[in-house]
Image (cartoon, rainbow, N blue to C red; front, side):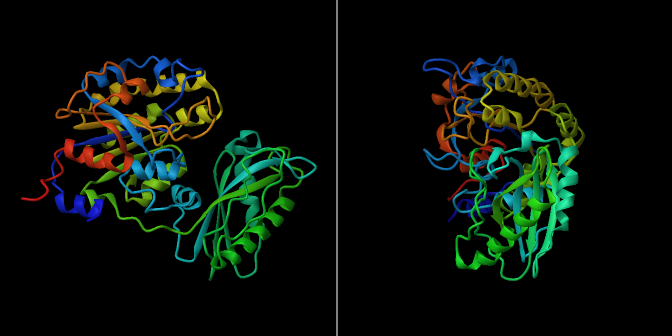
Length: 401
């Protein structure tokens, strides 16, 4: 019996409310041995107060020692084994902006980049170009024509856009063209299997024509393609947990992931304050709320310790708005760690706090990496977090006689 067979068979319906607040990339590292992490440095009175009445632990996104992408990181939090359910970033990005993927589609996440005169990348994110500047360029790329393949291009946010290739015989196994480094040219699209050769050729043709269309642009004169993927098949929250679930997210990719597991995407919030307003307005309509906060991740990736501390304090400041609604279960966690020391996602367990009236307190007085290392939840695989949430909400029956 797999996890979801178990949750299907033990479902209990009630009026409980579960909130999962995800500070993307929440976990960190000290700048020097023996120092404090970003979370430990931040002033977080609200999270620390919750720690006194909750239980903590370290969530392992995939497996020990594995640094996950955002897709697998969130899938684990949602209770889907990220090694069993593999979703490409392209599908996440496309679904996140409301693009309905079909059976003949391969979705790709595009990144505008800056190329030097020698064709080598000087900036992988085109100087973090604004959405106002990048959207017209993405729309211009709709002029690309590829024989036998229908091409869709949609703007996303800042340097990101989505490409969907539609046609017969398009496999989704094509390697990224982003070399993850500057000073080198973008990679050539390369098929990972025979079924994806046609896709790789179409992608190469797309890049060739796109670079001509972008010629002369001061920032976005090049592009890289990532996360080639077909539409995945995932069972819904309603089916496996018996929950009517909602997502309150700003960035399209996280909306996409939530939509793929059957959550409703509610509101059009662009700030944490607006997200809290959406939560308050929709409180009576849903059983489960996923609230996503991006900036603890992006500041970590930028290597900006102080900025990540500030963003962590922002996250803390929204807690009273949530607790005022009196959720049955409140979880605060991250999809992975993004230490500013490493400037990247890492394999470190993520501080995770669960608060309910029936959790077993662990005497913690703060929410931090130090407290989570010795907390009552121990170190556990993220895919089990939803089971803990359901049980604490009285939504799981007894297994066996």
